[in-house]
Image: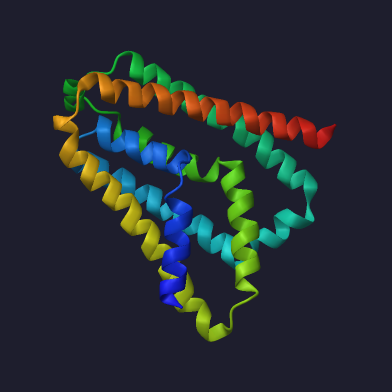
Length: 202
């Protein structure tokens, strides 16, 4: 059951999304020793969301359309703001700027925002893990959820380590374009979320 949770979570977390883009940019734009605490915070935030979803938040969201609408609208605005920040940092990106990284407080706050201000992740994770919880016996719950949490740790820390070690060998223009593409994707995703919120009202 541990392996089942591990493989399922790896399949989910490996897709391109807000958290992966954030962890990717964090590893590229900050020295490895400063990137680690931010990655740990992303993992904590993701673990908190997973546990909340697994133990009941999905039922609340599925039962209240207004709650879902608020999450989509507010989250969409925050996602656009995050994307704009990535684009703005790309405009002045220099590898040497790793000597003057983002303030740690801001990085840690953003680590929580990319998880808990991502409405699609909240809704999808809550509904999926809420449904999965109903298929497990009490004895299967602990090994399954431990596997899920282990997978996200392996993935996030692995990305940070690999990129942190390889970024000095990558062309500076490549790293700059990574930021530009990431910021653009995130902003478009935020616009999509706002559009979904509008369609829920119409």
